[in-house]
Amino acid sequence: MLVNTLFENKVEQLYDVTVRLASALESAGIPYQIIGGFAVFSHVDAIDPLGARLTRDVDITVDRPRLEEIAAAVELAGFRYRHVAGVDMLVDAKEPKARSAVHMVFANEKVRPEYLDSVPGISMPERSSRGYWIAPVADLVPMKLTSFLLKDKVHVQDLDSVHLITPEIDAALPEALRVRLAEVRASR
Image (cartoon, rainbow, N blue to C red):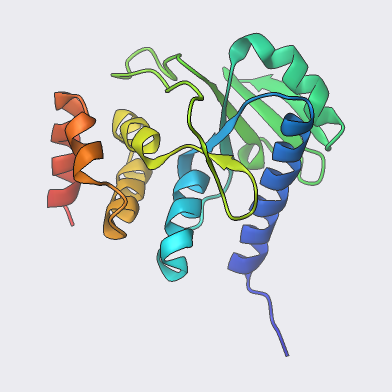
């Protein structure tokens, strides 16, 4: 007898949200890439499924000028655009809670004014095994090191533990982010 765990149910829920969202955006010809913890999960899961940590939501990079077009495209897939407490999100009708919504960040903009760097543009995303576009590790690492919350440090450790942070990625980081990467590596 097969028994689904809470973990497996949540993973499938996140995959469902991501695939429905990706399908809607791709059908409308809107570029995007999955970022954040779910992108890290997807990269790590492809190499070491037992080393992939669950995240509670999905984050996505899109282009701000296409926001109205995005809102219209995803409505057909069961999402509603909301701007709540300074955050742009797509709330899933299947689970209409802000904390489980898809959080949007905008390409080439800083998420917060105090951040060291902007979110990279959508240039060379990678296709996941489930068919959605994810940010390459070379873009995820600077984003995580820029945010630098505890969860971001753990995500960097996860990427590093499966050798996805290559010497080339390390060398391409600005000095301030290279220092943060060294700090994360030293804390293991």
